[in-house]
Image 1 (cartoon, each protein chain N blue to C red):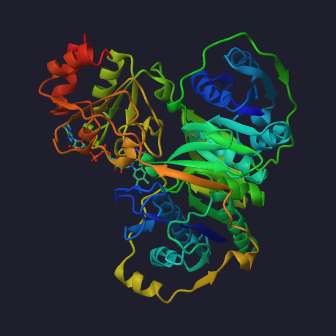
Image 2: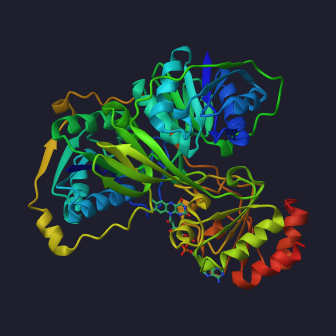
Image 3: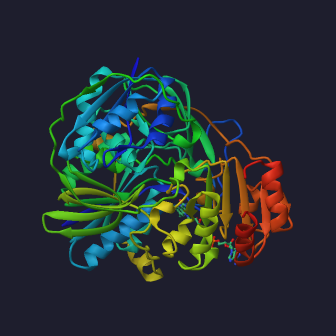
Length: 253
Length: 309
Ligand SMILES: Cc1cc2nc3c(=O)[nH]c(=O)nc-3n(C[C@H](O)[C@H](O)[C@H](O)COP(=O)(O)OP(=O)(O)OC[C@H]3O[C@@H](n4cnc5c(N)ncnc54)[C@H](O)[C@@H]3O)c2cc1C
């Protein structure tokens, strides 16, 4: 079984985000970019499936700017067999919307015929939490989101999902679209020899036009601003002082 | 203009707080029809009908809707979608599972976690773990959105609206429910509690987490946790507060042994009053705290619990 893993190039989760003063967006020029942390977990799961013999090939796909090549090289260094880059934007500040990404991924599925897609549950830049669900709707495959456990058993996958009330386990028909939560696994680091080897693995470059998909956005970003700042607080010296402040000043007790 | 709002229904019961908050947002968009779907949803429908601002309630009952699997629930919503310009739901894990699917089936973009409504096609939503707020305008004929409940007040109760039943749509039959492991608790629900007491990695163990729970119970509060505390097995996953956990905005949030990573702040920085207890005076949590106490939690928390008595 071939496993397809979509990976997104996003601002590194440790970087302090700066909103541009003119309100046009977040400054992404010259900041550290990395693979979306949820996608790393998805990729790790696919690689483990290959190591366990459940998967035969792991294909990583990225959609975005040309620089997403680096993200795909990381994916190859972690253990993906090959990679597909769909260059859909020139400017690093252009975010391709989940609906357009899902349409492109559907086209990749039509061409590659994988038996399973594993992706991250959300990207830490737009926090949309939508691509997997949309893809599942478009291809008509079963959908299992927010996975913290995934077992493929023949014609079905059994997936434990992190939900508001706790955990839910569902059984879905294969082929399936699975999106992963943080506690599914801990992704490996790529070793230096594997980083070297990854340079020779195939990385194919495509455009949305190759797949006949229109990626024009449905949402126009009118402005991007910093969230309201909190007023500065005070330090208290003791538990007594804390209790007094909460009772008398804040009035919350 | 009409809005179809998917109510949060769990095992036949209406989650009144989340649904009422979403109703407040939805009434800004047009006349609100609430959809209660489930294996049993009639009681939830009666409860939803009493939320102020609700014009009509639709009840769909079918075994296939019982565990809110994405495929049948999305199919139901799409079968009803023709009459509405907006399709909305409180941004719970259920709705985040279902509504993007609905949007794709309608060939429109979903707008997740809406925190402000500018007009019928213009919405505010947090991005980058709440480090920026974006205003987006939709060009789609239908708008599908999930609503961040922490930023809207709950609608009150009003005269009961009429309730109708609607038929189930075809179930694509792609998935089946196996089991739920839902923690039963007498504590208030995390996203609607007036007070939340959260513990982090500093708490050190599952046993020590009892300290946090004891303080919470003294205050009648819900218990929260950082990701590190959940990953380490000190607390269950449904207690996680943050970018990828729950978003809370209680009147009082007490963060204990939590450093204040941006991903945690994303879930609690809109709380009205924030208290931080941490032994490291440099911890970033103090930058958002209204009251900070530099102390060893193993001394300060029992003392606090006792002095509240
Ligand atoms: C994609 C992604 C998503 C994430 N989503 C979330 C999320 O939703 N929610 C979330 O919380 N995190 C999330 N994180 C993780 C986040 O980055 C931090 O790692 C996490 O919040 C740290 O948890 P913590 O503050 O409990 O632990 P630490 O950062 O280890 O902090 C522990 C704190 O306890 C203090 N301490 C230790 N002992 C004591 C003592 N005896 N008395 C008092 N204080 C003490 C220390 O001084 C320290 O400040 C996410 C990360 C990523 C990459």
